[in-house]
Length: 98
Length: 497
Image (tube, chains in turn cyan, brown):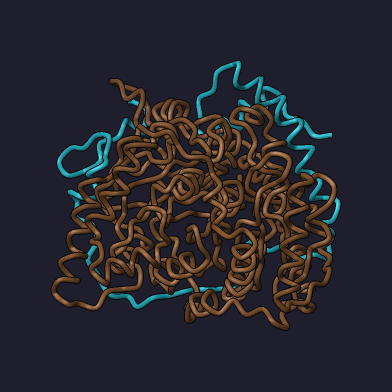
């Protein structure tokens, strides 16, 4: 039987960049016990001799001609930005202050 | 007028008996009257729709040749971008976003002069089977307003069943076109994967997502299918081959000599008795129309649900990483000195609903080092086994059939706290997405015990979509003869305003 502890869920939430309340961490960890049991059934038939399928179409390296075509203007690209400055996306600080 | 088929509406516009503006206005009036009860729409674009309709009428007046659905209104699932029109995918994280570009489906709709009425409600990022996961509240089934209209495309199916639109666009990752069609007594088609471009379709699970037509008749669905399908260089998984001739097939409906395979594993235990009754009756009608009914087996289908709930969350955990509060959408916690990481964490906490978070966490786990082989890797192997089951069965038959869903529409709130019970809804629709083939659901009547619609599912090999339309048209015609009027004429009248 598989299960995820509250701390496991907290670690996954951190990796997925989602803040979670204590109540949410606890309820998700109990739900995951049930969900993981259900999905673990795939292991019953996934033998070493079966090739995995990642995609329904057997396509490889699809190219199109390298031709310049019209694209969004910077105004259009910025039209949904939460914040902008000098025709650029303004984002919170990425590096710590030194 | 709003109860006509799209084909008849287009004919009336072409002959001058009505105009696209009058038809569009009639649908806008209908929406204004009943949508407070149904809540199919998240945004109604009255101005845009009327302007588009006026342009079609002007083209007709100038004697220009019109496309087969020119001037007919359509409801667009809110997961498709439309330039300048609010697009949320049912999520708070995209509230107020107006995309700066059109999806290829929208480009094709505009090219065919199909009038876009507005955006329809859906489970957040198409994750769900009831439309209860929409951040903007549930949609109600026009057959019984206390019940779900299916999901994720419940807004599109409800709009059709409530006569708010004769045509709609859906997207189907595990059944999100077919299951809503089944529980609302409408027609929905998931084309072969790659048959319709995904450019501008907000991605949930890229190897499974496929847009397709929703309508009230098989022929209307076929016309919409041909309008939106075709190769698109902007989607590298789009198939570069001629579109299957689905309109021709829908007009023919000739199933003489066709072999129809009943999937042994998608029937019996767990399927409501009225669902089975209607399914058996449809098989008898198809046999009477000249098809040969045989039984086929797909032993690995029982693992499809488990594999789906690993593959789809895995792909979604990656796809939804783009909602990072930096370039568009919601941003929370951007106070002086806050780090980008804390802004992302806070934005995603507030912007995503419970089911979306559940799937992102599950996908993050399934893809993490040490668990990848046991979960995601094993699910990919099951995908191979399911495809092999289909291939073997299609050696014996031309199409495969099953009930679309195990039950009729359930009550709003009935399953919202039990993810596994909710996931079981999709047990018969998921195998089609895993193999990337085509699937259709059309109404097969009402379950005697509750008087609610039941869906009949037809599955065809990749790029043989026309076979679904042949069988669908044959069954639709036989049922219409039996009923004397379309199934939706039995739906209760909506009070309206």
